[in-house]
Image 1 (cartoon, each protein chain N blue to C red):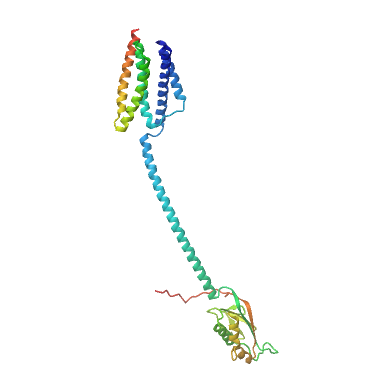
Image 2 (image 1 turned 135 degrees about the vertical axis):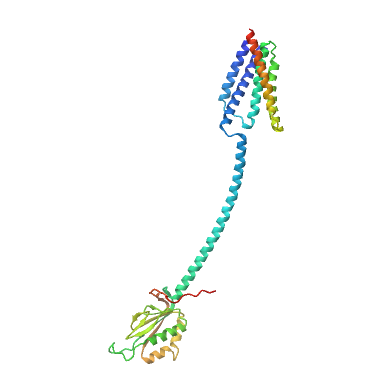
Length: 113
Length: 232
């Protein structure tokens, strides 16, 4: 399990370095969707860490959750934009709350040990 | 199973890292550049200005065309005025002119002493000559280099004849531009001026020339009293 966490941290660091050095910028119009998608992905990763702490980690659920959450969040923001409702706020609130919950649970697990 | 799990964790977290980093950079980029709605506003303004610009361009073109027309008109008017002026100067005798014509040389009857002429050419003879030439359609006349203009006088002043206030003496060289045949025949008609002069003993010679150059009036023309009357 600890190997998995270290691997996750390593992958994150590698990804950040890669992202900072790749000459990619997203058009301003899509930056909002990307931010929501990033938030969803972050939530998924913390969810995965929490599942690993609780020993019921499932790789398939983690992978599908990661991508479906990110895509759903971005799609929700996109549809909200088209409908004139700030639906991305819903995604932000939902994933933000889950993020903090997951963090809290992870903290407890770490403190129990 | 285990290996694929670690692999997927690594890949997923790496994707997350890329997303976060790209988002971070994009946000920084957005902060540096103008906001989207501001950009839209500017675009609207730009398109409006472009439209205005096109309109003004058309106006420039139109005005340039008008200006050109006006200048063309002005040039034409100027050319017409210059043409008119040239004609007027020729009519007034202020320009040296040349053309077909005749040369008449009149001299006093030969005598032993130049001072004691039995008969000398008088102003009246020259006046009659000029009158006859004008009657025959002479367009420009000069006597001893003095151009006959509208105000020219031919006046006896003692033993001299003043023409254009200039003393002249015989022999008189009279140049006239016009139809040479007409001028010559007008003078040589039987019972005409030449016959009359010959009777008086005046030596007269007439020569036709294909080109005679009549000098311009060489004094300044100044009208102190006569003023043009405006019509209307």
